[in-house]
Length: 87
Image 1: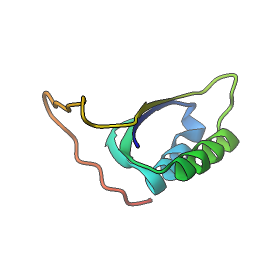
Image 2: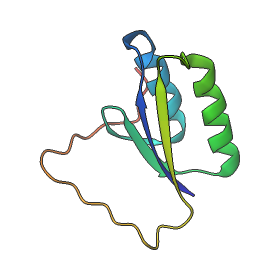
Image 3: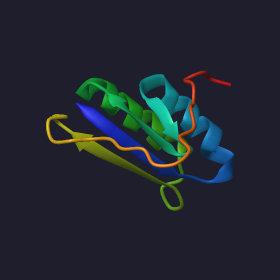
């Protein structure tokens, strides 16, 4: 399946969340990751993220696409290139 993951977390947890997401997905925007992932890997990703965030203050949104048949991606403006290298 293909997912888009966006997060809004406190400053102290941003790097931790980013490192976890980079293990599974491609970094496409400041707080956005996307990519193809298996069900099992998605469950591991969600479990790891749940352990690092404060559920009362942070949020993570996962958009799931079972098929890419009806999707399209369009970029407008400056598109940053992020590499999946853990700092």
